[in-house]
Image (cartoon, rainbow, N blue to C red; front, side):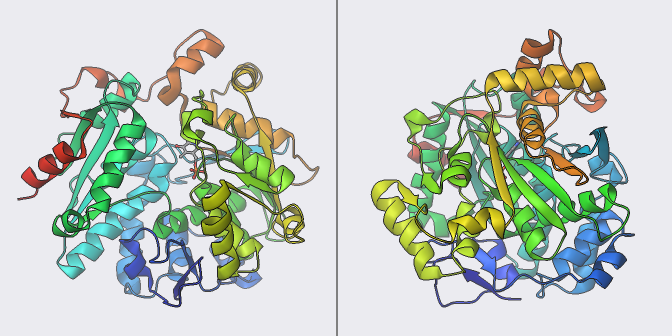
Length: 471
Ligand SMILES: *Cc1c(COP(=O)(O)O)cnc(C)c1O
């Protein structure tokens, strides 16, 4: 299996080459040269597998530069009941007739990002050790991504994490999750500023190529192909749980921000998993819903990006969207480049309304979309609590509302549960008047000793801190 860039660069790379990288050299995203097809016999064989075994089978189709025994061991070490809370890893439950919730948020940080990040931690450690190299991951977070990265990389050999966050702006629970980690290779940096300041610092440090090379600076952002690949597995796992045989179709609804999660569903569908519809659920930040309804992709300015009660979906542009558009335009790298570098760079938007390929987003690729508001989230959380005695988080509520708008009789609809309600307690209190239950292992974490350094919103100060802590 070789990987290509969505913008037409002639190079072809292997899995471990792109594992530790971000963008392709021409600014595109990496995708496999073709999607391996899973036939009926393979699907039948996979139905009986454990999650770790299934992960190994899916990954094997895309990874040919890690010996099979090693890859198998990495999957077995990652997907355990101990880390994810149950043998199913992603248990499915029926909520109402034909509507299911697939639980992706029982990992260490209670959001679905653990599903991929935990594997990434083990892959990084393995590959860095094989090369005799080190990596310093620099990131910016306002919540879920940073904690998922820290819990995945803690204690890993060859890896350090320097995670910036806006001082005092994360929820007390999120702060406690991150700052209570005492591992020597995890560095929390509370920046005197807002999230955008943190992102600017990461950009400034990464643009200093001399510093970047000397201190082996890397990232773990959502465009990483290995993260996306790890997410493909739970589409198969959800399908097997919702159906009794492989001649059935299902649909998925995916609370979406950067389009990483639902892009993994697209990959599973391209491999031949019988998915009828992929519903993209957005909140008030409806860049993606607008595209799937109208054919216009219009990136928002920072001032037009709303702060909502499903904050992990508050995006101004969807960083993985280019992967799908590349497939939509017939894998034409020049056309993808013209859209994302040309039109988007020039005008902040592109328009496929007049292009015959746009109709294929729904017809050939099965995409649909919906949008929700804060009031919708409150109503859905209340209704789900009252009728089904089930507490869902704000992102999952966006999903459930969207799912109901796209139900088809006889086709199970699987809503991906992307976080647990305890992470967004404030909105739960607003909806229900009481705090959500807290898993026992998080009892009292706010009172634990905190390991965090405060720095000014200044890239030089962050560079100096990194240099001091990389012997
Ligand atoms: C990251 C995140 C999302 C959005 O996922 P994308 O892959 O960026 O589309 C949705 N819900 C939660 C809880 C998240 O943490």
